[in-house]
Image (cartoon, rainbow, N blue to C red):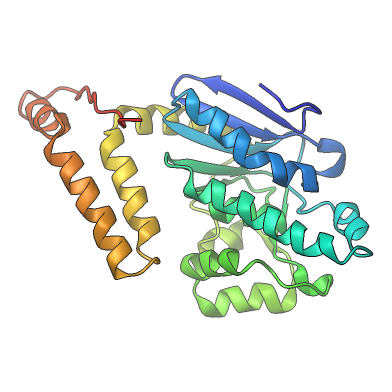
Length: 264
């Protein structure tokens, strides 16, 4: 599956889908059109019901951020910069709201909008070649507010301010120490690690995973929104056979076979 210009590619392997950012000649920098298309691409992937979604870049880099030429074209038109920001943030929120587990797989540069994409995923896996940077201070623009808040949730206020104030790059080992990546994997172990992650995630209860993600995401939306989400998933758990299957499998010392699927 790809878009009309192959800016996105999608592959499937077992329980996993992989969304490839596919502009390797530009270090997979995101054009305005790519930000526009991303929500629909994610919806299409979800129709195939993969258990986990990996987000990767083709070539040597994850994503060098927003294509500066795309932003520059809009600066002469008073209506375009606002439209660009709204489109960019809609794409970020679509990725953050994707209901199943998402993992950014980061090799090479992960800069600006690339960090925005990575932080919108649930988890981040990096190789030693990964290099992170949040660079709006080099361009004289403000970084999207929700992405700042997500980065604060990962790193804390001080480390987030350091990255934003300096716009300096952080190498893979320091990013792992800061919490910007959850896994640091050698290149020759990468594909095996991804297969193992997909197998593990695919063998667990989808109900538990979707409920956990929904509750974590709702935790920043206010007390009533959080309570509504908790109530929904507690009801889903009570009406599901996953718990009885999990308990039976534990007692019988076998792997459980969870059957719950979302109603939609």
